[in-house]
Amino acid sequence: MNNTWTCHVCGERRDDADIEVISFPMKDLPWAEMNIRYCSDKPSCYKGALEAGRKGKFPRTKEKKVV
Picture (tube, helix red, strand yellow):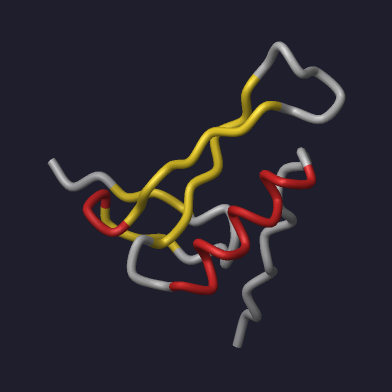
């Protein structure tokens, strides 16, 4: 079974082995957590996930251009 996930930061669909998850408390609901998926091999995705977590807001996934 091949599991794939979409990165919450860049929007790219990746294999399970290439996705990590980081959890943060939500800004408006401090008793709740949000899970942010990011590409484990892309430093920019990790940085984007950390930034969103520090703000306590879910990241805005970059839109993919359809060609």
